[in-house]
Each structure stands twice: as structure tokens, then as C-alpha cells.
Length: 358
Image (cartoon, rainbow, N blue to C red; front, side, top):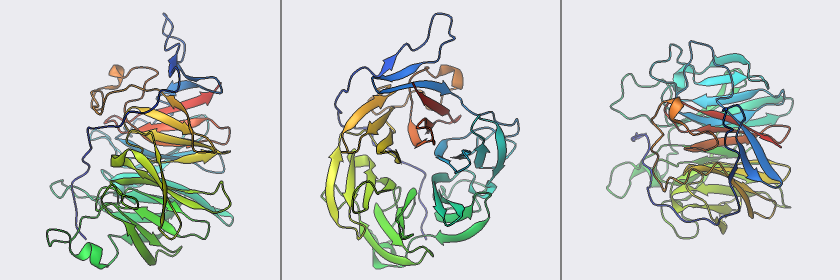
């Protein structure tokens, strides 16, 4: 297994269509009103810094968010350097009250997060990046996909890349880089792992974590990917489809479950991941906004657009520098059972925003 540095981001972006006013009533003169994002049927009241952390935990980069069947919110973060607790998974109830935390073994490399109900039980699928080899101490778990219970008990793990020719020797003759970012789960339990920060392959496994096939690979042609950061199984049609956030190509790319290219969906700015609720899909665009897509895959709203043009001037700033009603680097998002949206951002001090539909 090879390791690689954390992340390298492309500064160039592709222009996207303007879908109407993005931000309304950012803040009243007294500073008491919550900002409203969007318009028409897609208006949301934003509560920034949602969730009350206990004093021993300080957010690092907040990367993934899911809701379980009990309406609890699970958030995966890297942990801030000043945090007393090393726990990377934080769980809140629906009102933002802290329930528990765990996952110190993923400190510094916590990344992807997916939840799935299997029979009567729910499971989490966590993805941890490969750590920078210069970092000390090194994380206990890295370059790995782990299936766990909701309380963190491990079920199985996929450690490192599959043992196939594509990874044994790269273009320079050295082992190809591997650095997984997120997963999608097919109806039959097959797991699709995006090697987003490595060699831009999608690696497919069965429900036990046993290897099936590899497709994709770096490039911009049909079937090729450049940083497949997030994956999603679209079950809205008659046949399930794998949708990949082809991030550095600023597009979504759709595949059959056997890995055959179907088509592209353009109009994104570094898309990160997906979640669907009653046909509506939320896509966090790392380049400063959250995009909503309808049942026909048309872009219907773009929320909190800070339009940084591929730069992130506030990413490393303290929280009081953040602008209400604007996103900085949305990295993960999910709907809750009411259709409200939770957005987590790639900022050094972490940020969780709840968007309540109004």
C-alpha cells in the first residue's frame, strides 16, 4: 500500500448557470435574524454552528454527515490540533444535543461517511485517507474503508488498494497511489470505493468486502475520472445507476453498476458527494456553494454561493470571520427525515450548518 499527501485542489473552475437570487435577508441590523438562502420552493433558514460540542472536543475539518433512523446526526471530522479528545465521530440528537463520540483511530484522516440499513440494523461505512508520511504520530487507521455499527464496533475493513496490476505499477514504475475518499452501496450490498485522492479508480467489492472489479482511472474522456470524490447509487429510476462526483472535471458522471459509462451531468464547481430525499438531490460544491438537483437531474437551486473563484480565503480563518449566509467549502451534506439539510465544511475549525426549509 502506498501513501500520499492529504489533498491537492485544482484552482480552476467551470462557470455554472445562475439560477436566480441565492441569498436573501442575510442579517437584520440587530444581527438577530437567521439568514435565508434560496428562493421559491427552495428557501432555507440557515443555522450556522449547529450542535453543542462538549468542551473536550474541538472540530477539525468536518467532512461527512448522515442521519440514522432515530433522527440522530453523525458527523465525521479530522479533530482540531487543540482538541483534548481525539474522537473523530460525533453524534447528536435531532435538537443538537451531544450523545456520544468515538473513533480516535481516524484522527487526521477521517473523511467519507455513509449509512445503510441492513435488515433491522444500521451500519456506518467510514473512509479514512492515507496520511502524509511526514506526520507524527501516524493515525492508527489510514487508507481504509471500515464498516461499523452505529457505536463504532468494526464489522470488516478494506485495507489499502486491491492487489491488481493497475496498482502494482504506476506510470513511473512505482506502486500507484491509493487514497480513498468515499463509498456508495448498491441494492445487493456491493461497495463502490472512490480512490479520489489516489489514482482516480472506482474499486468495486461485494457485501463482504471481497474484490470484484476496477474501472475509471485518471482522465477527462468518457469513463475516465479526475478525483472521484463521492459516489451515490441513484435508485430513482427503473435501473440503479452509479453517480460519481467527478470533482476535478467539475461534473457528475453516471455509470452502470458494472462500470460502463452512461453520460455526464455538467454545471458543478468541484462536487463532493450526494444525498437524496424524495427525488431531490443535494450536492455540496467545494467551491463555495450547495447545489440542488431535481428528479430529472436539472439544477434547481444553488445555496450560499460565496463565489471565491477557486480560492478559499476564509478556510483557515477563525469562526468570527465567517460570513452568515455564505458557505466556504461545503464538503458533505445530507437531508434529514423532514427534508431539512445538514452541511459540513472543509474548514480548519469545522462548521456544521442546518438548513431548515421555509
